[in-house]
Length: 538
Image 1 (cartoon, rainbow, N blue to C red):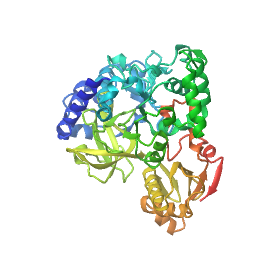
Image 2: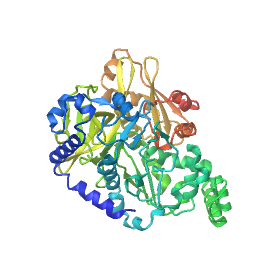
Image 3: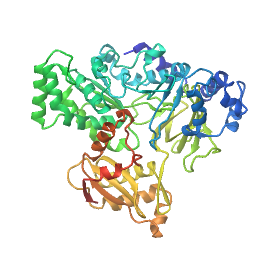
Image 4: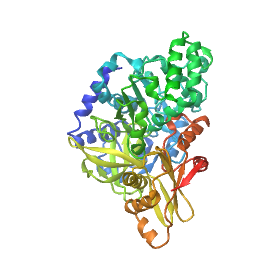
């Protein structure tokens, strides 16, 4: 673990928390000074000396997809389009619609924005477990996979996810797991498909004494017990033989293999804490839908395992970094991006009025808009955040869901309305979730629920969910009262339905870091697969 770098970036971040206006002015001034002569800013009448008011008036708010024409020019090799620096890579992400993103990545963006954010994010974990600095092999990072195959542009520049970028390209190390034996899959297996790569990493880690698990994406934390249940016999066999993916790799260890098999036989399954009894912490986003299921999932990692909130960010840029033990919110990472916010009560438009970070009000939801030195300007990232409180004078925010809608009976339903309605229903009934999703039926919404508890969902679950949707979704109660919208239909599905869909997505070729929980599924036929083994109507 790069302790000095982590602590340095953390302290730099802490020093900004009482100075949001000054910090944001500096970020905006630096990105304009660096890129003021680019085609994009010149086309909109801006230059190196433009100010914040000019910046906001001259540039429309755009989604990443709307930057497509300028990004295509940069990919084709044209210099000075969005950034003065030539991009050395392009970040990808499937997004909420499944469309592939292509986001320019420059050396300065990595060194001044992304990597400081990345390192500062581990400070709370390091403070809780300072001995990790001397034990990188005790950290399993499911999110990082810099050796996995990735696409390239026509001129050879990488097109890959943030989890795949090799920090050594910028003179940096990786994260806390640097040097771990499991981190490098044997070269002979480098072309393995994503599901096999997930197994190979787990196989290598199964021999180690893992103490901390970094998932970031909570679907990885939820999926690991399911993966172990299916793959532990193969893991046992390969440890005994000293193979990885059938390739000789380590010294045969029949004693460790027998120990794992005995625990699986004793408990009737192999949960993470059976494999790694010294596991102490897991790191993941713990907000939105994940906040409803991670408490039960954590039990499968061990009774003493602490759940640490992961940093909040997207392929477009860093957003927030934890500074304490708050379970699901973190202060804005103001040194990285210039942030603006639009009221989430209205759809975001090119000309939506915005407020700055210093003007945010606790208790309200906002669309997130960011700009940074890497070439995105007033980019709406399709995320909605909730302002919890302040740390110093910097707002602390939590992620509430994607800015996507589903419509039935004239009602536009948001992800955050569904999550809040589900939370109220769980509190009223004592039910617990493994996962949930919603789709639009004929004149109604339909919810697929996988219960974390055996047996059917409590009586009245659907009625209560309908009641809470009337409280959280604008227009829902009025549409129900007018007869324009039928009550929500609840289908209880198999406990493993969502993990099976997770496996299906990875086996279909998606990197597992990209497979996320979605209240509204973007992939075609997902609903049909999830509900194929429908158990009951609630």
